[in-house]
Amino acid sequence: MKKIAIIVVLAFCFLSLNAQCPYYYWYNNEKICVERYNKMRYILVDEEEDTFIVKEKLEKLGYMVSDFKKTIPFDIYPYQQEPIEEKYWTMIESNNVEDSAILNIDEISYEAFSFLSFSHFIVGLSHRFTVSVHTLSDTITLDSMARAYRVVILGNSKTWPHLFRLSCSKASAGNSMEMANLFYESGLFKWTQASFEDFGTLSVPSITKSNYSIYPNPATDYLKILHAEELNLYNSFVEILDISGKRVLFQNFEDEIDISMLKSGFYMIKIYTNKEIIMIDKFIKL
Image 1 (tube, rainbow, N blue to C red):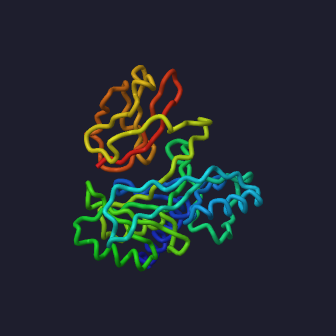
Image 2: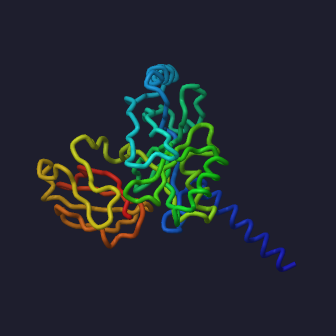
Image 3: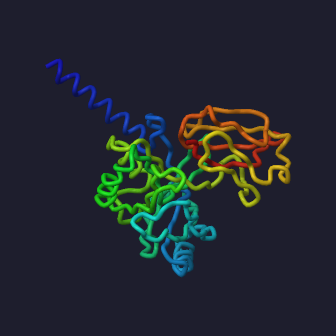
């Protein structure tokens, strides 16, 4: 009877924990909870002509639709000689913060709600996710799982061949975060991570990314900011947060930002000037 009681208590605790954390991702073997933000979502279409059709349909439904952008190709070897995908994505915003309806638009090939992370940093859940395999022989297992859950392997990194990029669609068994979690929880791979798009912050009205870039990305030992001199970043501060929102670095800006001490994973970098955030971006530390 005692064993049965213990099992019942453990089951209740497990269900309660999952009820409190319905949306999460894995970081350094730790489950990180995030809050879904229904007001914004990520939308993907396959063809350029579909962007006009979808925009018109969404605006008739009352959504604010940003301009569509072409997906950025990765520096990867195409998987089994398949061409690298070229699709179009945008962010849409609802007037209703509780809008949880799934859009029934044929031309939309993938959609996902956004999430609040990094202290109210709004991130849109892209259709892509990354899987790090232990050895390249694990590609057989990766291919089998991809087929089973109806996701597409785009290819692996030319610089770090153990990193594979995968793509979800409406036909997949879940969105990119759910698929990344599923692949990681199988215990067959080193780590996984969904790809997010920056939507901005609730406290910062607009941050432009048109006049700077971070390189190299992924990085191993250091980061640099392109056009740092033109942006007058030399009297500013650098803050780096891990994917759980914990500050892991804070210092004066330098030409080379030393990140060699950081663990492998995804991070967000902020640049402050005069107590204002003038730059936000994310990077991968290998």
